[in-house]
Length: 233
Length: 385
Image 1 (cartoon, rainbow over the protein chains, first blue to last red):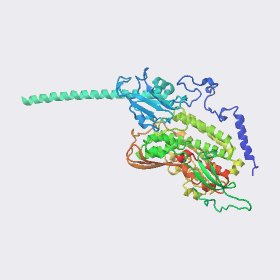
Image 2: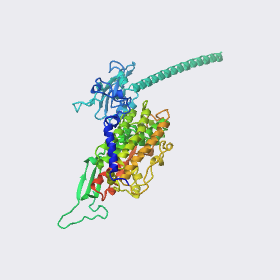
Image 3: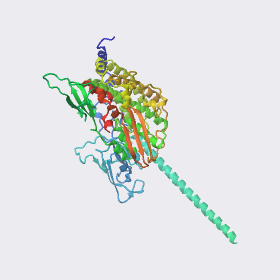
Image 4: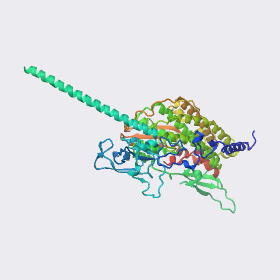
């Protein structure tokens, strides 16, 4: 038989230990727990808040490769509209679960960064007040043109048009992508390069095969021609 | 609506001379801090005693099932996060299992292990915050809930590092997972899992012997074994009523047959609020055991199996269920050969567990009705869908 009230006192001892301990151990603080991080990496003052676009909050390890809030469009060179990767195929528009993407395809083709003639989006809007950051558009894109941004300062005084991001707001360079998601961007670039070399190798192999076939055919024809000649003789 | 005769068994309103007595009808909710969301209880009271109670829900209806029937299979995956927003990982798993049954995709070993790890971490998150909210409903404002949230945040950080989001993870894919976990993630998880039992010890010391909690929860909101079975109750609530039933053991979906763990359940027929509270405390210990085994054995390798590029199953139907932290979460899909499901149905544990609320609350005090509702563990996102 235990004393009535001993359970309450036991609980209060726990509360007291947490209260006093919170002054010595960060992990006892219920508000801000970065317990597994090393002591030196904790923010000491508000000056650590990012000032440049694309700079990450230095105090969080949670802003990682996979952090995501809203999509952005990638371009390769210095002129955003000339090197845009998007070819306005509209797969993302169709797959978007909350239907927040609006694309208008261009009427004429123009050269992309590799010199190939491609369509481009005349309009590309994302309503970020509807977007739910699910990343499905990134997964379905066959051209690696759309990826997730981790820019979080998007508040605007204009509640009607302010949250409708247009092509100009969405276009970001591949370098910016490397800055915010280094590992993911490197993996993506590697995959694109691998696919490109594989494609070229395949093309080369196909061309060689075609050449061989043509040669064989030509050879066969000449042989057949010789035979015919012989028969005629 | 309820008829006035549908009141507590053997209930009689005592008429006193010179006083006009009648029942008091109170509408608790839809915006009430104790109802865990937009949920309403129409309570009829005699003094403080509940003589009738009708749960009213549907305020958070978002047309989840019909939405899913009008979009591709993959596109409803992020919507499953929003069913029970505490447990997005297990919701994802149940849906992925159903879709994998339709087309029979093989899931790689590493993905299976990561799925188990994610699901058990989710169970920790759910149970620890449920206990916090439950004690909050008892009137202990703040302290236990904040301790619970402090620990929950560590696991939320792990989810964010793996999937990019704390709560709306959207991490599972048909045939595996969306991406591999980042470098060092498994070590960080091991650290969190190793330290979790210390917190549980402390938490048990704080709560389990507290006389106020004992007197507020023991003998309150009893649910008999027969009623629990016939009402289709699942999850910790069923086990608190004395039924040894856990889908991880019954179905052994995924790779749960490889892990050694026990299923806590009561051996009496009481099933009161304290039982439901304790079952969750004990289940967390078992989840830690599973996590330790999974983190020890996890192999390397691929993260996603050979899923078809365009998900277009042949006409078939499939039902898959998992032991979610709240109970049996099932997805029923009918495919008709198009890229959209013909029928998409969710079996939500919260909704079905909520159906016995009236039976548990009758002839209890009004303050206990709040405690009983807290012990059911509902999330309105899942009740209303």
